Amino acid sequence: MSEPANLAARLRLAREQAGLSQGQIAKLMKMHRPTISEIEAGRRRVQAEELTDFAKHYHVAVRWLLGDEGAAEDLHEAKVRLAARELAKLKTGDLDRVMNLLASLRSDDATKKGKKR
Image 1 (cartoon, rainbow, N blue to C red):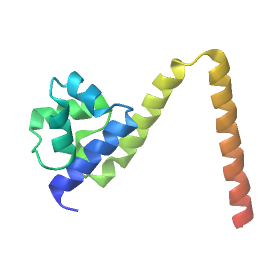
Image 2 (cartoon, helix red, strand yellow; image 1 turned 45 degrees about the vertical axis):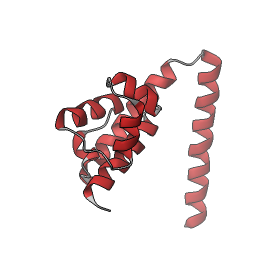
Image 3 (cartoon, rainbow, N blue to C red; image 1 turned 90 degrees about the vertical axis):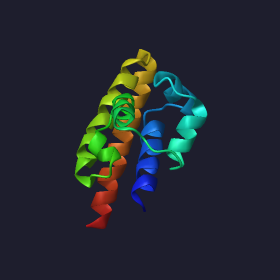
């Protein structure tokens, strides 16, 4: 994948993982929604200060956006922080259901690992 396409794809992925629409990020960055679309399609260059703003809003490292695979840990940590913020917004009953789901997923993973041995 070429560098602009790689950046465009990562910007889109980061936006989606942050749970933002193109319209929402455009508003946050004081841009027009079609500008975001052009950036994500690789048809518009991203200025350095814009890249920094995207990273801030998406809670990812600039170096990850630029394709540094070593920054994957940073992305994972950013996803965990985002998940924690979203979990904090839940009502108690909903949070309990999510916790039960997580326990179920961990149990399923342990069962799958046991079968592979």
